[in-house]
Length: 361
Image 1 (tube, rainbow, N blue to C red):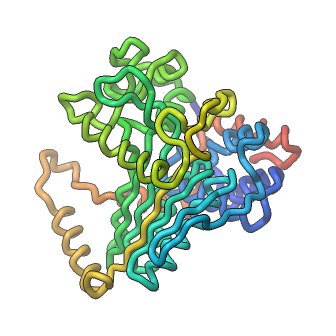
Image 2: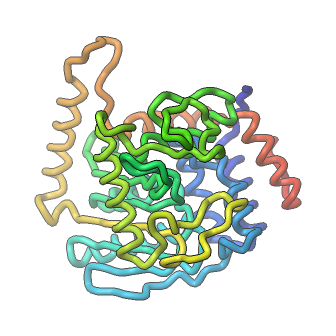
């Protein structure tokens, strides 16, 4: 495995060109590229430009609408439901979060459910939009079924990530951004490209036995909920995944559970859908709806300071504040560039050749 390093601007131009070639309007191409690049900058390599080919393949199968008419289809003063018109989730999700933020500015909080969308990148991108307005941001999405509920040997839930983001003062925001499965599918894809085994407790084979084979999903296996098994709390991960599915899809009118369409283009969506597309859920809450924003941020700084000074079992290892590693990655990669493994670079250059655009160099 070999790594190549690219500047943020180089990858941004390439990614924008891919979306423009798909027929996305320029403003949408720039936004979609920004969501993916933020993922790579924050060190979440599984959800960045490595996913570009997947979006293109879905567009080629006419399962992504490059020019959607995204609109509100149901609304109250503090809530809304958005129809993404089959568009890129990378575009639909920020549209919905902006509505939640605007409602929060007027009423203290805003809540938006989304149907008829697609994969929206990292949940943290959308939640951090609220943080920029001194708000608490909440972002979640359901996903194609890869996870077996506790005791089950059938894929019924997605990795269903959720994110809560909180504005701090002298420190970076606290960002709790996680899959509700034992591992995100993107981590299996990274292990597959690197030809490396995965930790025990991430997946089970088709017989329900634990496996360290990163290709296990292709062989009929399934991901496990956060916690891995009942003795280690998988029922809690299952409950969190179920919560995301219900808020994102049952509430909005999107597909849920085993009916969520797959991200991979070689698998067809279920023939008996119960809703429209993939679903998301967003929330924005004004901090000053509870106490003065500066008071909150001062006390969150104090919270962070205390946790960072916690006595640890190993003196070489310090308590990590949620979002801290991603913040460090972002600072480092903005300065020194974004590393991509050779398999991703080759994939992107093959994509460029197919689309007739300049490749990475």
